[in-house]
Length: 231
Image (cartoon, rainbow, N blue to C red; front, side, top):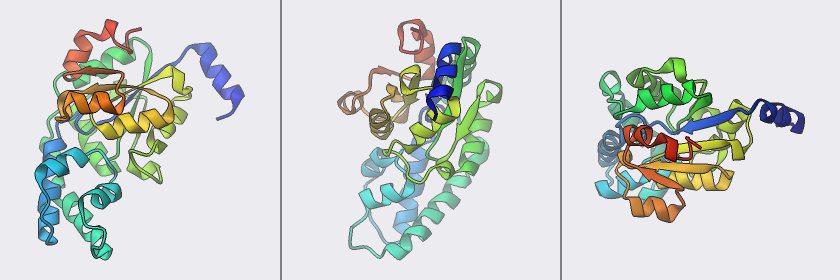
């Protein structure tokens, strides 16, 4: 991003609200947990669901590296990821938005925030989640795992979201639900508001460096004026 481009954006006072989607705006983390568990079981791996749940939000390759033995036959990783994708796709038509998700996006867009979705999901999953939210008119841009070389907790997706919004890190706030979201924001120098809607304990989010924590999008919306997105 050139300094001239950044200066032009700053002059207009644009602010960007960057959002994770899985677990943050759409209630999918437990669906991912079960479908990853089944995909790994089919490949002969026994992994506890708690461990899987706490790895949700990482890119698929990092998730498998975290959960499976180092000496595994890595040639099977693609097959496991493919099985998860197929199992999870069965839920596409009935994914539930988290309470307040659409209203929060619309309110922020109405207040002048440029809303960017920055998801670790591939494009087809992101499309299904956008349909579940039903607030496309409020979304300025959307990025998926297909848009970056390295997924969360690497900062690539957050950095690309900043580029797409045309703002420096200081003029953006990221909203996510996992420690991997918080870690990616920390590396990118972006403030992170964490939600509990993904099922991650608040103490883990605080320890990871979350600036603020709310129950879900509806709770953030109720307290918006006192949050990083209201100041």
